[in-house]
Length: 505
Image 1 (tube, rainbow, N blue to C red):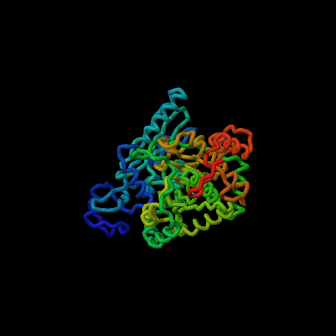
Image 2: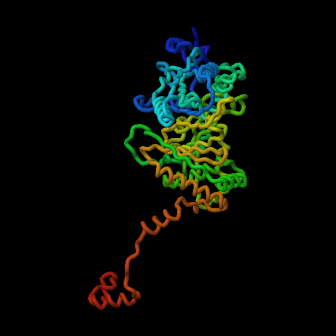
Image 3: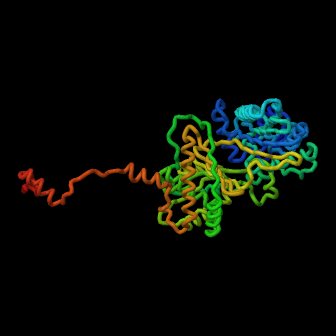
């Protein structure tokens, strides 16, 4: 059996170790959870009777002669390689924090459906129904793996591969890495022989354990000082939890994309900073605030750990971003300020959001999120003769609004919105306002922040003219004439009063 010394990164006594060992078949390791994993666990376990919004699904459309047995063996080989893909999450009795339990001998849940004899449109629709059904089925978070694979044959050589997984075990950065390994194993006949040894995730959690958390708390407290209330844009609702989400996607035209990259280069900032400032302007207008806080997803992959860029797992974190929208400040000046402030917090982005909010108070709260995804989401081509003809990712969050930004092959904006708070029309209007702000920033980096407007010409006319119509017909007469007319009609009316003295007209 194991002893506490076998798991030095978690605080478990012998009784708790034996409890975990008895509950988890094939236990080989116990690790702590990252800050974001702890947060996702809370949301996933808050209401076990509802849909788990952090169950995601990657859908690939593949054409060509596919060997089903080799593909299944390839998925098993990749899961066998990575401890993080064989992780479950356990709350030991009497323990404050949950732990990750890593097991060996974990079999990947596999389902294969043949719809090739069904007509094309019906086959595709049925495959979609089955995939949606798969995603709606919750995982038992204590039983690894938190990943299952569905392969649907929709034609003679047409396939839809739906990989359903929990966000607890993989971030967006890891998805193309995962697929690359699967296709490499497939090309090798379903083995991992051609893959380099997998890096153990224990190194990351050990690094996390050695970070200076008191210094990080102080840094975040300084950065968010003076904020006394959260930045909230969503209307009040009686809903107990997040509802269904939808996504609105728009790609910027080449001219605006080029102009924004030139703006970033000229101001000496990243394109991410440009989008953050534009998002802050929109959020500030929606919240009625000039001192704005929203969440940002950071990669969380420390450069000092060799090989982190190829490691599979959940390493991202969510941290607050504060933007003070001083109206007299120019766009270029604000970009520089925001980038400098964010750079000063780079060494402290490992701290969990809940710990930041406990240290800072309600001012660190928000209900909008920005994720700048500088990688190809879920894209990795299979080996010939297979061809990847389509890729899609189904994901959602508990935030009211989430802005996903992809700068690959042009700037793409994706607005995830909770349908119980915002409909598609509202999401489309929001995207239009964000683009309008980006256009103004690109056109005039020396323009004052206070002059940036979210309204188009039609909206401005409606607000300023239509909703503010105060005109009324009046007689074409001068003021002295009106006074004389009034005096003639009421000669005894009091015109001036000073103490006890009264004068009439």
